[in-house]
Image (cartoon, rainbow, N blue to C red; front, side, top):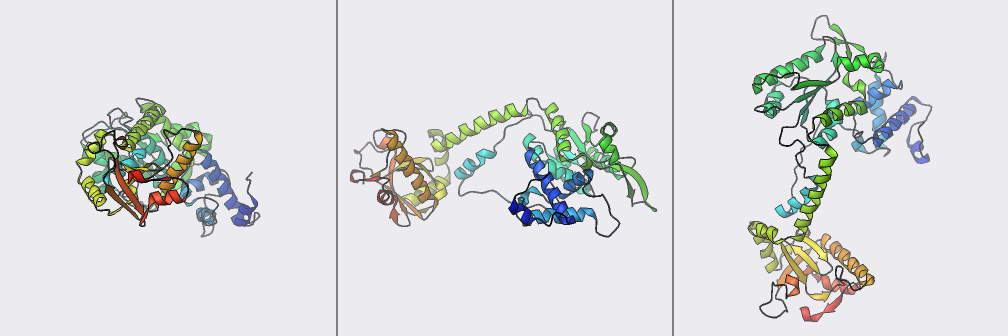
Length: 434
C-alpha cells in the first residue's frame, strides 16, 4: 500500500481515476527502486514491464493508445509535479557530450581525485558487456561503472559501430564478452547475437569460445527454471518475412531491473581476482592520501608545479597585484593561504590560532575566521600582492620567518581581507607584520 503525504496526494490525479491509479503504482514501484543500491536511474521500458508483471497494466490494448504510453504519461506527471527527481527516469536514446576543465592543471587534478579508480582486474582486460536493448544497457551502466567494465548496446543496424568502437577493445587480447539479450526460439534476437559475434570475430581475428563469449541473460535455462518468466512468453512477428514469421519470445526486460542487475553482479564477482569492496576500501584510502598531499603542497609537488608555465603566470599576477581566480587559492586558516605550491602569511592582522590554539575558545574563534575567509575568497573579486616580509633580513623563506611562509596582502573588491575580519571581530590588527 502506497503511503503519500497530503501534499503528494494533491499533486496526483484523483485516486479512483485511471491516471491516478497508474501514477500511484509508478510512484510505489520507483520508491522500491530507490531502496535498492542500483535501482536508479531506470527507464520507462523497465517500469512498464514491471507494472505489467504486477497486473497493473496490460501488455497491449485494443485501441490505438497503448498501455506503454499511459506509463510514459504517468512518469512525466510525477516528474513535472516534483514527486520524483527527473534523473530517476533516463532517456537512453539520447546523450550529451560534456567536457571537464578547470582554471589550471593543479585545480583539475585536485577535483579529479574523487573520481580516481584503481585497477580491479590486476592488469587483465575487464569483460565487455554487450546488451541487445538500450533499455537493459541503460539500467546497467552504474553497475558497469562500479566494476570498470566497458558496456554498449548492440541491437539494430550497428555494423559500423561494432567495427569502429567495439572491435578495438577485443583485438589483441583475451577480453571476455558477456552478452545480455532476449530469449527467443528462432527469432531475430538469435540472429542479432550471431551477427554481432561474427562481425567481431572477423574484425578482431579472434574465434570466440564458450568461455570467451557467454550469454548471461536471458537464457533457456533461466526461462525453464522460472514459472514467472514462462508466463511472460509472447508471440512476436519478424516483419522481414512475407508474410511475417511468428516466433515465441521472452524479452530481457521481463526479468525486472533488480534481477537483471543481480545476474550481472554475480557474474562479475565470480570473475574478479579480488573482492570489489576490498579494493574500494584501498582506493578510498589512497584518494585521501593524495588529496592531503595536494592540499599540503609538499616540496615534491611544489617542484613539479614550478616547472609548469602556469605557475609563472600565477606569480606574475601576484607580483603586480593583478586579479587572481578564487579557485587558485586554498585557505589554510584565518590569515594563511596557499597558492600554486607556495604558502602566504597575510600581513597586517592576526587571526586566532586553530592548530596551535591555547584554549577551546580560541580554536572555535579561529575556525570561524577560517570559514569567513573562505567565504570571502569564494565570492571572488580578488587581488593578491606579494610584499616584503618584516622578518629579519636573510630569514625570508626559512622556518625562522613566518614558519617558512611568504608575505602577501589579499584584497577582495579593493578591501584588505584583514580589515574585513577585524571589523567582524574575527581578527586583530598586527602593525609589526606590515
